[in-house]
Image (cartoon, rainbow, N blue to C red; front, side, top):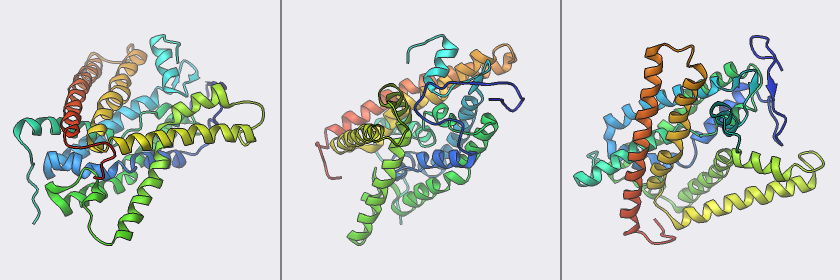
Length: 336
């Protein structure tokens, strides 16, 4: 395979999934679907309520900008030394030498609790825009992979983010500081309307969960499910149904047991989104491009690595603190 410069690019065939077949707009739609998941229903309460109109709006715009920047760095690392790296673990392994796989809009709560919720809200800001598996998604795109991926990212962070902004801002505008951690809990009206909205959110979550789980699916399909026959062979279909159905069932059970959605979004942002999208993206870019970067550029990337690492730790502590506080109020399978 040749890249945009006409040079031959080696592509790993050690995968059960298709690669280099999707146009950029299809990949952009996949990214947009992952971002506009049912989690959006929690951002009015978990981002806007702690931060307010000004800080919340500015934070969303800033988070979109830095997320676009960090994802673009990852996209540009997809082809290194004449080889495409179709998995995040492959990319990191190549770089680091690792081979293992009348509304009240006031900001509520006491000062100490407000500090923790504000930190958690900032973690939710970056969680809102990122999927954490960009190399796996980029593996499906047609050449030239870097240019097409950048088109998909621009689509995601412009038109693709419009539904996200609409839900967040309208939810906070309608309910102010009383907005629930799950927006539909604040909605009043006919039961059937709420039922349709919840069913729609569930169906969209089914799609989004499969997008987030694509690295795990690729590993399991390649390692255990790519037997004889094509992808539509009966035994391969049954394997995928069991794996994906089991994953969805377990996630649904855990979500029902632990209902404080916003706190776990903060924890997920701290433990996965910050390291994968911001810390490692900047550090890997430094490792690959270090001989081509100026001192100022190197300092900028090191500042990102250190700054996001520190905030990831702080955000994780804040999220755990909020989970502990909510655990004293909620019970298992609570109907919130």
